[in-house]
Image 1 (tube, helix red, strand yellow):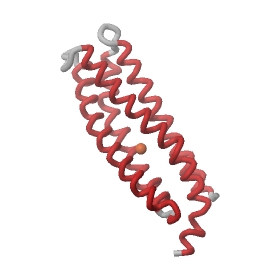
Image 2: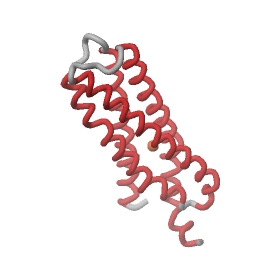
Image 3: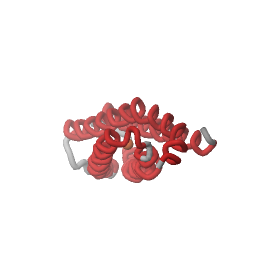
Length: 158
Ligand SMILES: [Fe+2]
């Protein structure tokens, strides 16, 4: 595996670590509701959440998914799986916007939702995100490693 391939795997693993840290952070907010919430942290997160999720999704879609789709032997099943993951990205991205708005309201001291509803929204978001990341870690990363090893032969055969 080339240096570039190893770097790609490292970047993928780092991006999952970042998303899981984000989930832990959001879980902290949910646990702190309603009285122990740190308004400054809510404001910081309300600005960082969407761009961070978007950046990682874009990286996966532009640099990871194409490698898997280029491996012809797994392409039929992979196409369907990757389409599903892209839909999950879109849903997570929309959900992240709602969470951002809710956190901005909390940070500015004018909550848009009841504490229960805000906690429900946070948990819905980070639980879905953890499931998505777990699937990609367990299923995509091993396939990505295999694809990177096989890709030159597979590309050469086309
Ligand atoms: Fe993803």
